[in-house]
Amino acid sequence: MNFDRRTLLKSLTAISAFTMAGARFAFAATPGDRRLVVVILRGALDGLAAVPPHGDKDYAGIRGDLALQTSGTGALHDLDGFFGLHPAFTNLKGLYDAKQLIVFHNICSPYRDRSHFDGQNVLEAGGTSPHLLQDGWLNRALTPMGLTSGEGALAIAQTPPLMLSGKVQTASWMPAVMPTPDELFLNQVRALYANDPALKASLSSALALQASAQGAMDDPSSKNMQPGKGGAYGDLTPLFQGAGKLLAAPAGPRVATLEASGWDTHVAEGAADGQLARRLASLDAAIDAMRVAMGPDVWNKTAVVMATEFGRTVHPNGSGGTDHGTGGAAFLFGGAVAGGRVEAEWVGLGSGALKDGRDQPARTDLRALFKGVLAEQMAVPSGALETTVFPDSAAAPVIKGLIGT
Image 1 (cartoon, rainbow, N blue to C red):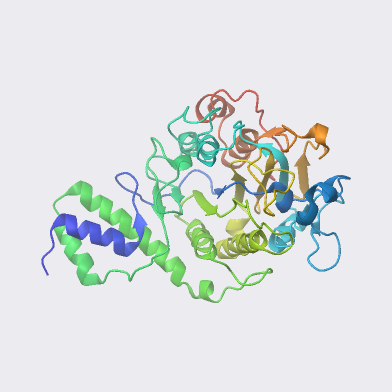
Image 2 (cartoon, rainbow, N blue to C red):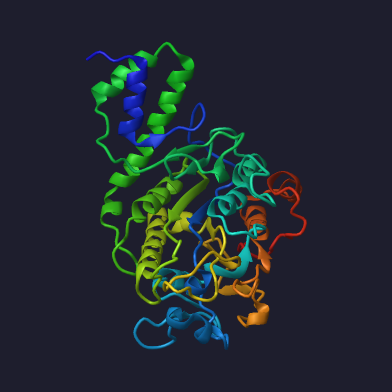
């Protein structure tokens, strides 16, 4: 078979179903042995559904048909007598009981309008307003972490999100959707690139990433893996399970990003069951898949922070859903987390406490959470946090006490 360079590269990229961002990606030993995973929930998760404040006197009345019950079929998981978790979050409740989960409420980025596009930009760039910064806060944190260009950071996506994009080269990976190329094809590619040092190195690194990923997905323990609780895995599981296996590799990445969409519940949101409940169950099962795939040793060195661009309205709308809001919920979990609590500057759900008479007010800045995790989990110096990673963030002081010793 005769191939030119362009055809071969295009075919290899499509068949392997992974992408290379920048010139190369090579797994390498990185300072320390801790892992950090950031999960972006795109679409604005309803924080009052995910973390219902069932002890608030106004909760049941203001939420109406979206209110979760505290007993009987489909009852919420009580956490502390005031806050709970959605009944679909069975595995997250297990993490809370194991003191490996901290729940945050009334939390949001500095963004205060209602555009998904702009809200996600602020969430990922780490600025104070949309499009103020052109790279991502997590990418800016890689250098003070000691992760040099092309080493240690991976997006589980077709391409790295803005959060992981910037001066430090990173890579992305997705589970293969087409057959892996055979050895004859790969040998032809190797021969074509043999006399080009840059392309040869790029190909070698890419094939190493694909081999590591494929080995993880082919591991018998992955095929036989069962969820701890919460039912069958949903469509998020291959991504989270693959991330867990890659992060568990001794020379694998130390930082990873994952994305889950589908949280824009304007219509027929549902309470204990319905479209949101099904999506939450899928997320909950995928998180457990990642935990099991990592194994206890790596899980105990891992922190996962999960956030969305903004919350949703307190009152249901006329279509049985909720609209774009402000404050919402975020989560920090993992074996390295000093958890078992809810952090919330709670001001109630009465009309006088709501922003614009409709939203939860944002009492905590997401940047404060991100800064705390970077400082305690990945040893990012405070100077870098305040000047490089999150410029103009003095109003969001570092949250301390997030990570165990």
